[in-house]
Image (tube, rainbow, N blue to C red):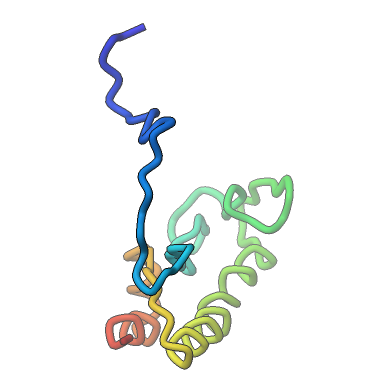
Length: 119
């Protein structure tokens, strides 16, 4: 085995630091929303088959044509799912990080603009 390994697999080890968070907080939480709707594998995008890996359908098999069920899962996210989460986070002033796929954001300018204008 190589002596130098580029990943840090040890961290603090047994010497965990005693961190003092502001206001006596006991927990630091980061919320991240993946926005991928419209970037999944789809024959409409020139892919050979529709999405199978990132799916709610366990054991989804590749289909050479359009997979309407699969498309529906992703479309819900862009049509309604994003807006429900976005509105809640804005109302409660909850900061969130967006991991947005460029192709997905290009396909939905309104979502892209909402993200850019968020507090």
